[in-house]
Image (cartoon, rainbow, N blue to C red):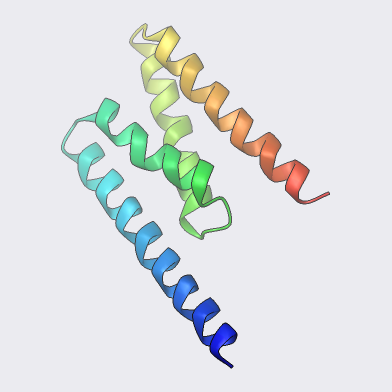
Amino acid sequence: MAKQTDTRQDNRVSEAITASLWSLARSIEQAGKLHESLDPYLKLVEVYPESKEAPLAAQRLLTIVEYLRGVGQFHLALTVLNRLDAAHQLGEQANT
C-alpha cells in the first residue's frame, strides 16, 4: 500500500514539474526571449518524454527552429534539432 501511495505521489510531483516547465517556457517565449525558452522546452522533451507537455514542447521547439533558421542562426537551430532527435531516439529505444 505504501509503495502504491509513493508512486501516486511521484506522479503528482512529476505532473506539477512538467506543468510548471511548460508554463515557464511559454511565458519566456511570449516575452520574446526565445533563446531562454529553449531550456525548459528541451527539459520537457529530454527528461519528461512521457508527459503530456512533451509533444507540445517538441512542436514549439520545431517552430522556434524554423524561426532561427529564418534569421540565419543555423548553428543554434541545428543544435536544438540534434537534441530533439537524440531524445526521440532514446524514446524509440525505450519502447522496443
